[in-house]
Image (cartoon, rainbow, N blue to C red; front, side, top):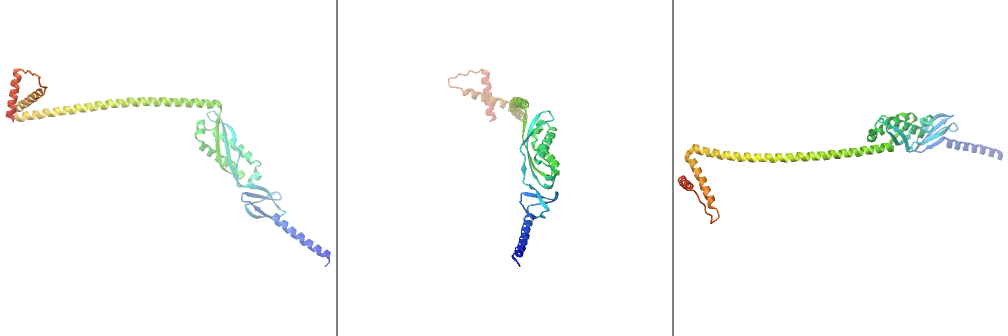
Length: 293
């Protein structure tokens, strides 16, 4: 074998080795975890390569698009909307999404972010247009849910998943804000007046309850006194019925003696003049007391 033949055979082997290396280099694709590769063959979709080690046909297939499947956030967008009660509001929104089907995204939409932002603006105007201002401010969670569901239905054909929608702020024009502030102050004043009136009403009710309670207690006291007097009268009546006139005379004599004792309790040096018939009455009382005892 001549040197030329040896060199020629080695050159062929070297060329084959280089070709094999190139084919391996072109045919093996390692896809990162956060990406997907869209492979085309002669300009047409061939396959979508997921994360890991993948093989393609060298010189026939090529990776046309490398799509990140990480979650993305659109820049904060502001759009004007008019509520059903004709109030102009400016709404700030932010949308989070990720691409889950790259073969749809790369062949059906060119500017993904711009398309989503335009879609969100239309949905926000449509939803707010069906609500009053108070509902927009008080039902933000329901509004966010409705926007997200509507947006998800519209971008499904683009291979996109809407993960979150945030309604950051609802701004009003200066005139509407001043009117709302005036209305809020008027409502606060009305509540203060109502509270004061309820306080006065409660004070009157408590005073009336106190007077009623005092009257009831006084009536109870009078009733107890009357019952006691009636009981005493009944006892006397029963005694008279049982013992006749002597029992009555005994009671009268007892009262006279008690009166005499009260007179005797006076300070020394006091002179008490009694009529003769009174002295006779006391004498009779003492005699009856002695007879009764």
